[in-house]
Amino acid sequence: MASRDKFAVKNRAPAAIQITAEQLLREAHDRGGGSASGHARKQRSQITDPDELREYRMTQRKGFEDAIRMNRVHLGNYVKYAKWEEAQEEFERARSVFERALDVDHRSQSLWLKYAEMEMRNKFLNHARNVWDRAVAILPRVDQFWYKYTYMEEMVENFAVCRAVFERWMAWEPDDKAWYAYAAFEERRGDARRARSVLERFVQCHPRLPSYLKYARWEEKQLQVPLARDVYERALGELSAWELEDGEEAKLYLAFARFEEKQREHARARGVYAHACAKLDRADHPELHDAFLRFEKKHGAVDAVEREVAAARRAEYEDKVKARPGDYDAWFDLCRLEEAAARDAVAPDRARVRDAYERAVANVPPPDKKYWRRYAYLWLNYACYEELEARDLDRARAVYRAALDVVPHSAFTLAKLWLAAADLEIRRRDVGAARKLLGEALGRCRKLSKAKLYRGYARLERQLGEVERCRQIYGKWVEAAPAAAAAWRAFAELERAVGETTRARAVFELAVAQPELDHPEQVWKAFVDLEIHLERHPDDEDGDGDGEDA
Image (tube, rainbow, N blue to C red):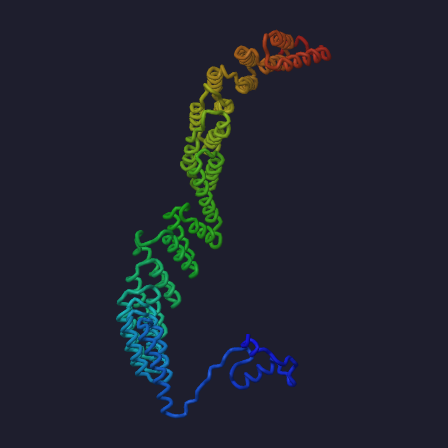
């Protein structure tokens, strides 16, 4: 209680002279005790006497030595110590500190760099050279030492020693950049012969595609076109398959062709592209084939461009049919492409077109008619090609026969194939063969009662003027399918067309008398239409039918 009363404020009245916070800060700043921002300023001592300097140095060195003694393996203490000695121009002491640090860790890259840079910074070239020699002897795989060593020798124009350092470096077979740095040094010296020799040793040391490409570009930069071309040709001959990674062979051909194109040697470039495209598949190297196509569009003739476009499309279609053999649209595209190529060629390659069709029709669909509708047109196009383009009717007939043998007629049939084959026989002027073929169709497909087959056969006989044969065909149709209203109507329409109205009426009467019809209303309607017509035109009744038969 007494202590609290002791420190209590006795007089709470305001002071006569008020002091602001700004005044306090300004006073502190003026006296050197701090700044307006509140950061303390370190007091600096001014040394004016050699004894004070010795005392200061002794104090600093004692602090550095104590730090090293406390943590001997911490290289940062050595580096700070050496830099301080360098600032005091005590270079022998600085070297001693660096040597003590190297005794701790002689494989520290940053330590060697700081040591050598100190020597170079203070122009002790022999000392720096000694440090670099020791560094590259202990750590020969650290490229930074070699780069700085050679740079120092080149800057002091000690070119012979610089070249010797490069040779020591190359004995370790470093990476590409080191060899290129050596060649660039010789190029700066204006000695292209030595630079070329360095690059020759480079490609022998590293027989890889990037090495040859760098060498070739260097020769091209030196305007030595024949030598650059020789490097590309050597790369093609010397680099085997196991020395090239995936895609590098195409990259080499592309670089070679672009080099020739840049030299306006279009024939050479075309030869390189053609050889590469023939050797490398488009599916694995599309960029090479696309580059050839762009080259032909730019420098080639129209036929060459079209040939390359066709090759690109052919590869695309081949990939499609390989991935999905049942894609008949892709097969159509491929076959049409081969037909167009054969049509435009001076010597048509019929075998290539036939091979495309044979491979296409070899992909037989499942025994379901909905899959066969598109497939049938492959056979039809194949036969049309043999007949119209190849002018080989015997092959066309063989194609139709092969197509008919493939179709499972017990499940379904394709009338368009039978009728197309019969039309071919007519064009061959072999009516007997056409009748035999259609007769076979009716016999094999009797259970199916294919309306299109009967109508097509009857139409053929009608065109030949064989009305009696037409009656026999329709008779077989109604016999095979007595419940088919379409068969009775077609039979009656035939009799009406040839003027045999009595026969037509008799056919309709037989039709409506059937116990079962699929569409009786159609038969009755056609019957009624016949009676109405005869009522309005009585002269048409009881005709003898000579008009049509004649």
